Structures are given as structure tokens and as C-alpha cells.
Image (cartoon, rainbow, N blue to C red; front, side, top):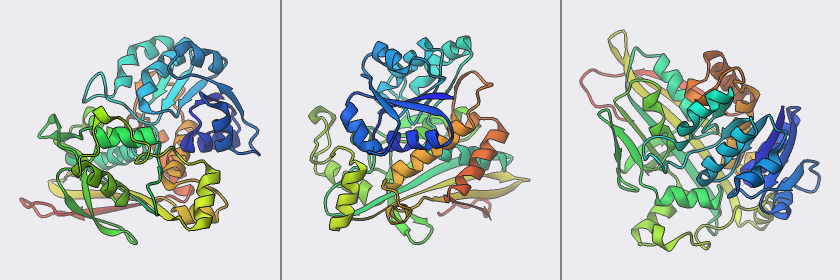
Length: 387
């Protein structure tokens, strides 16, 4: 395919390289061409053209001729890029939602009829979390006769002297100031930020760590895919603890806007390498767990998926320079592109992909050295489950 990647940061740059290795014709668009080239590196042969994501015609001019538009920008630009993809009659893929038009349903679904009319596919939230987590929740639901609850648990930790943006600063800031969505007793609700502290045990070497409610897209997607009573998402790790501390100190307010001292620009691979050499950045980890509780043959069961992604140290050993979150998201997005459902139409999420495609994506994730493990536990009847 001819693929236009819009947004050349930590994730977009790696994703573009991975897609080029798959044999696709790839070029990139970014508002700051020089910065984009620094992310791609001097050896990269991928072309970068200027594209202003605030202007739909700028995207159309830059992406003309593309079969697929990959949106690696902050989710605030989703609707503009979706309109550009429709104008270009191109397929579309993005990494997350902004939840502005409807607080409990991704804004991308507003374009469903328009993509159907163009006979094109918009695959949304196709990264690691959301993305792989949606797939695992759906697979867990298929192993049960009925589903009572789905719990997403994430761990993000950076061992560094100062705050380092392992994700887009705009995305991190938006997640920090957004109220978490929860689905309780069949109803969507807005919860308090950093609420409902829980001690959750991740596989070694992470172990038990506090997790708190967080704004995650899975909560606003899974209840539309299969019948479930409760869905929530929580995050732990020192990166999230830092945000929680700022919030309790009154330093996180939407009216104050993004403070670059607290949310620095995403580091280029060259800067990441420099921090590692100086010892200012020692390691970083990213892990996910998806727990699906329900009933099979009248027996209560807990289906638990654990995913361990390569650490910063392991990525560095492979001769690459990327943070664990960017690395995981870029690789998963490239796998979703590899199994892109071009025969379908409309706006779809990862959990509604055909079964064969979902199985192939999970197989490829394991092949990329992502440790995906499954454990099914019998639960005692009429007893609260402890995780």
C-alpha cells in the first residue's frame, strides 16, 4: 500500500520505519519538517512533507495518492484527519480517541456512515492500550458464556532524574486532566481523577503496585462490543504517581494549560541516547493486564491476560532508541496495518475485527517478543474477587 503517516514524533517515526520494512511505500507529514527528520534519523530515506493538522486541505495536499492515512497525532486532530481521509478516498488508522463530541463514545464513530458510503475502513484506537488491550478483552469474552466485568490495568514507570515524556506531552497532559470514564452496573459515569486506589499485582519484576482510575478509551468502546456490567481502567507506576502528586498539589488544571516544565516535549532518539549515556535515564517499563470476569458452564471464572513489553534497557540492547510505550504502540500499529481489513467498510475498533485477523495480530505480537500470557482461574461463587 501507499501509506501517509501524519505526525512524526516518537511513535510516528518508528511506525513509519516499520511500515517501510513491511514493503509499503511510506511518506510522512508534519508541521515541523526539520524536527520530523531528527526523529527519523539521518539514515532514513523516508520523505517528509509539510502538513498542518489544523488545516484539512494541507493534509489532503500532503497525502494525495495514499491508500491509507495513519494518524499518529494527538487525538484532538482526529476529526480533521478523518475528513481528509474521506476526501482522499483513503483508508484510515489512528491510535486513540479524544471523546469530545460524546463523553462516552469515541468521536470517530460519527464518521461511520461516510466511510461506508466511500467503501473505506477507519480502524481506530489501534495501538497497544487501547488496541491490543481491546483485542484481549474481546478474546476473553469469547472464552466465557457471559461477562460480568472487564478491568484494564496498566503500568508505566521511568527511572530518571527529571520528568521525561515517554509519550506525547499533549497526550500525557490530556490524560492527566481528563476525568476517567467508568461503566458501572450497565451505565457510563464520569469518576474522580486518580480515585479508587487499588493494590494490583503485576507479574515479576514489577510486583504489587498501587493503581488509580485513569482516562482510557477501552472503557468507552468495549460495552458497545459485548454485553458486560462493569468496565474500568487503572494505571500505576511512578509516571502516574507523579501526575497524581501534581494533581493533589493543585498543579493540574485545564485553565492553566500545559506547563512544559512538567510536560516536556517528546525526546528525539538522539536525546534519549544522550540521557542514557549520562545516566539521567536508567530504565523504563510498560506493562498491561486485562482481566475478564464471567461465567462458563455455570462456573465463575477469571480470564487474565498479562502483556510484558520490552524495557528501555532491552530496546537499547537491540540497537534501537525508543521508549517502551512508543516502541509498543508503533509495533502494534504496524501489526494492525499488516492485517488491515481492507475488505470491510465503516469505522471499526480492534475488538470488532474478524476473528482470523485478531488471531493473526496476537500471533504477530508474540513473535515481536511481547510476552502475552493467559491464565484462567476458577472463582468461588458468591464471593468478591481479589486481584
